[in-house]
Image 1: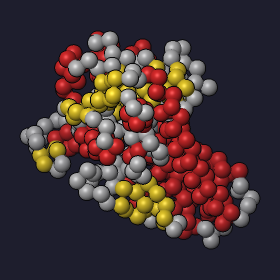
Image 2 (image 1 turned 135 degrees about the vertical axis):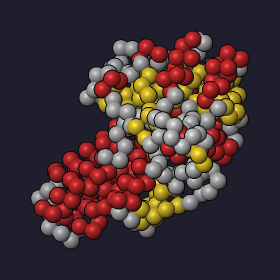
Image 3 (image 1 turned 30 degrees about the vertical axis):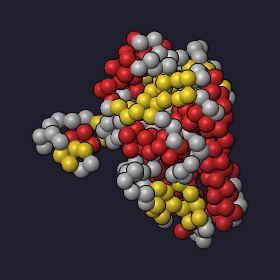
Image 4 (image 1 turned 180 degrees about the horizontal axis):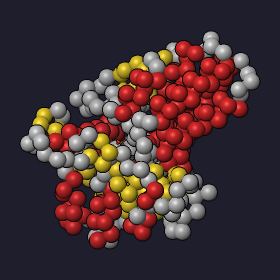
Amino acid sequence: MIKPLFWEDNRLFIVDQTLLPLEYKQIEIKNHLDMADAVKRLAIRGAPAIGIAAAAGLVVGLKSFINSGSTIFLEKLDEITAILNSTRPTAVNLSWALKRMKSVAKSMKHKPVPDIWDRLYQEALTIHQEDIAMCQAIARHGQNLIPEKANILTHCNTGGLATGGLGTALGIIITAYQNGKDIHVYVDETRPLLQGARLTAWELTEEKVPYTLISDNMAAYVMSTQNIDAVIVGADRIAANGDTANKIGTYGLAVLADFHNVPFYIAAPSSTIDPGIQSGQQITIEERDGNEVRNLFGTQISPMNSKAISPAFDVTPNKLIAGIITEKGRFGTPYNFL
Ligand code: MRU
């Protein structure tokens, strides 16, 4: 299983996912600005992974202030947290992890700064470890959704690259295959940035799980001809009523699944649930540069002045969702996540 982020001799590294699967490159993250840049350009991505990354980025960013007084250290904590928080607005895991780090630091504000920093380092590792455990529990709870022989459609990348552990939706699918089920996965390419074609296809190849890559516009055809048993995807933010933001294109898949009577499931750790918002209408959708749509791998594919939008996510209304699987089990309407 691939690790999107790891520590080696107290140094922090990520794998640059923008280059996969053509090139496997590790980058050292030396401070919070390196991490902010990596998160913004999707070198590290996926909701759980960016929560883990933000916590780790804060730790490396604060390292230079370990010998400062506590007033300066705590001011820098606020400053760096704000920088990391502003990188991507939709996945709640990012602000969830930073809030958790901040409250640990504030609870120790009268302690020596090196102790606060050590405790933050431990907290970042704990956030990572907890995500590994949540992925395992999600994979376990998801098993009874998958028949002995199943064709499953998925979108974007929700595997080891997107989390600290074995993944969410993809973790369920890969575990089902490893448990001996006869699984075939239909992988949506996931335009504009191709997380499905580049990352999910790569992970499934590594795990030897049989799959077929499709372009996004084939999903209706595939659902009407290939006996799809389930659609399983991840999430970036889940509102209290179950409305779910996930990679752009997810909502369309849920509508198609409803039309074809295919159950549509979400898999996510509880760090992706935002109990503070009642419905999906309150979720901020990240708007990225239109060049991501005008171009493909840096090559222009449309007239230069074409108007293009690049919303990174959409919201699937709860009524299209057959179940949300978290580490605590399977939830359905009315959602009572707590
Ligand atoms: O823009 P990305 O690649 O960060 O979007 C990722 C997704 O939408 C995933 O489905 C979601 O974060 C869940 S990852 C377990």
